[in-house]
Amino acid sequence: MKVTTKGQVTIPARIRGFLGITPHTDVDFEIAGGRVVLVKSKPGQAPRTRFTAMRGILKGPRTTHEWMKATRGD
Image 1 (spheres, rainbow, N blue to C red):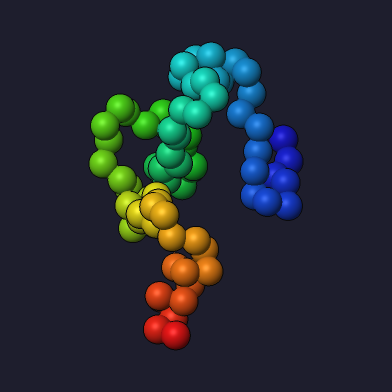
Image 2: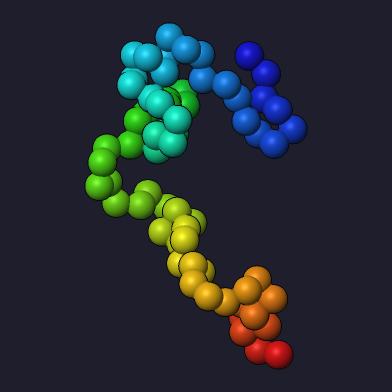
């Protein structure tokens, strides 16, 4: 299995089936004993990182240009 230039890999069908991973399923990676483990996120699970906690906060009527202007203080 190879990692793409975007850092993506394809999860094999047998693994997706075992974990019940379907399109749009949230998954996470954990480091355990020097290995990286793929886990299916539980429904309603709290965000795991400061970055996932920020996902979606800029939704609304503003355009990208308006958000950039507001955050830069222009």
